[in-house]
Length: 120
Image 1 (cartoon, one colour):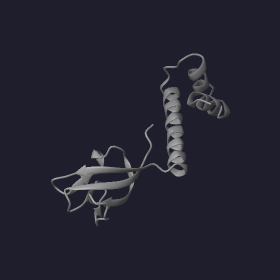
Image 2: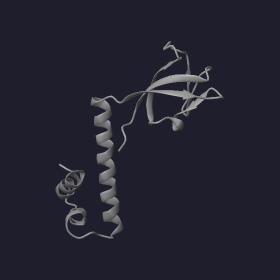
Image 3: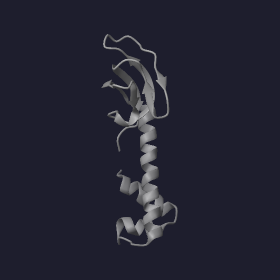
């Protein structure tokens, strides 16, 4: 079943014939219809991400470097959910300080293990 089919079925069940028609018959330009269809799509993407992250844990180990000792989450390859560990080049666990925006570590080159949100 495709996401389009899921949204179509859900809109039909919810009595949103306008959204159903927009997806299956005649595209609409009505702002409410477009917003509802987009909201339903966003909700389905959230559910897919939640299910994927819960049942198929996405874990990555990434070698990163920093001259300041601050490793910003925005610079990671994936969007981190949780930092699972920090290791030096020999694989030894390193102490770190975690903030809302970055991980602070005294070393300039480390491997950070983290769980992440799967890509859409």
